[in-house]
Image (cartoon, rainbow, N blue to C red):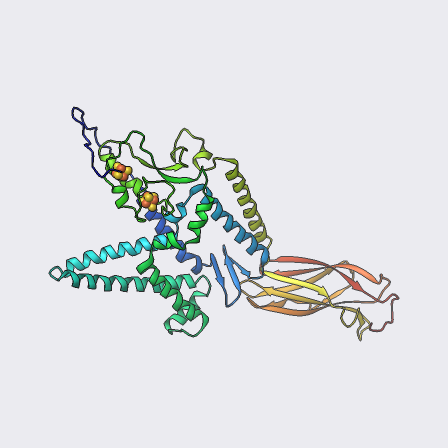
Length: 448
Ligand code: SF4
Ligand code: SF4
């Protein structure tokens, strides 16, 4: 491309009136989304919206406290999140990278901080030599990035270790336990990343960048330079604002492009002043419509432009429904119940009652103590012990013998019964079908 700036006001032609300044820019939208993402990043672990607690083997999701062993919920959660990633990459290209990715958000925040420090140092020590200013600027800038790295590493590890526990380890400068060592390593990597690596990460090691490259097709959203009428004035503002230091005019399929839209804002600002149409757009593929084209159907404007995308939407809905169903069927107190026939099929106690023994295992996956009581159906006159509720502390697992006692009678040797375990609070009930065994003839019997 030529570096010569052409005459933008040809002889004999009046320059069109400048367009009014845009009401909003992609930059503003992006910064607002960055702020929202930062708040979500902070909120998820502290509000238990999504957090693994590795020491206690718990997984917190959408307000539920789950055991790591609750496979169905974890399965649907992971599959759902995986398909969300695939769908977003296929439909919206690298929008995630420019708008939502923590690497981009904190890299740009580090650059912003560096710029502020540079201005502050120049004003504060106006008369100093340039080399002295540079050293001061670097020290203050790195110190700020280090403090931010400690904070970010703390929030990140809070996804895996309870925040209060982690804070105690931090203030006691714990570098011996696993949590403390993990904190130290994550802090170090975070500091190196945001002090030196920044966006280089996106074009070298980021797996999502590579995955995205494999998933895009002819209908994926991209940032596209279109200049059929040769209106580009070669101002290169689109190049100068690009955080990835590329020229979008070379190709819309450059791996470095994170679809941030800064070049769109820049071009709009320059050409808007000249009354010319903007040359860089978000577009659905190289030959597809520009994003937001009102002549298209609403679902096309949302990116659902072929059957592959609609099918993906249905897969997402399937996993989302599975996840919601698994969550709604989940009981805070998990009760397992089985007949204990190890030593006796049945026995006769000192009062002549026929006794069957069962094993109950109760896991309280909630945050407050629970009581579990049992009742029996299908065996008239039967008594169940313990008669009252069994207390299970939050997070505890209790194993309890349960006995059913009944007077000998003319019933069958094998009676099919239903045992219902009721957990309070929550009043969730779990029913178990089992059998009660009694001697073939009523009356006397011996332990079998
Ligand atoms: S080319 Fe444009 S959209 Fe792509 S990274 Fe650079 S500024 Fe952002
Ligand atoms: S900002 Fe627009 S006009 Fe300027 S060089 Fe880029 S594409 Fe051309």
